Length: 171
Image: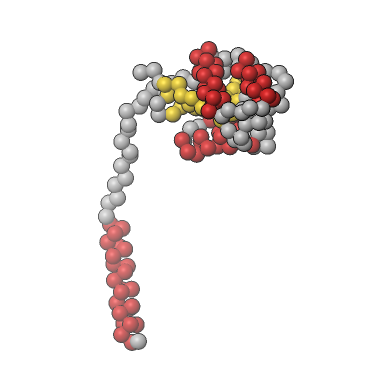
């Protein structure tokens, strides 16, 4: 027991010396190297014709992959494809999870997983009348271009379902 006590005292007496030696060393903190900056692609307007055409094709592909024999669903899908022309921009900063939980969830996931800020996102809402929940488009930059997610595909779609497509960057 006495030997352990003596060993502990010896160890403790050496400890401040090693800390003092470490404090005298210069610490160099270098800034990270700048990567080649790529001009961010401008976000398209909500009523952009290329955006609406891409959305139309993405929804057709989504509906082809998720077939349903219900007459109500088929009618809803036809009406959805016919009423894609008019969108308005919605400020993301005014949106709260209480307003639309699934929409807020997609926005938060893009912020956390992709590091996208609100300034780099655009949220568009479909102005078609007669729907209980409007179709939303969430547009944000990704490595190869712009990602467009169509959210709130309707009451008969699976919870949290979305159709997404990529607008390639112009280089």
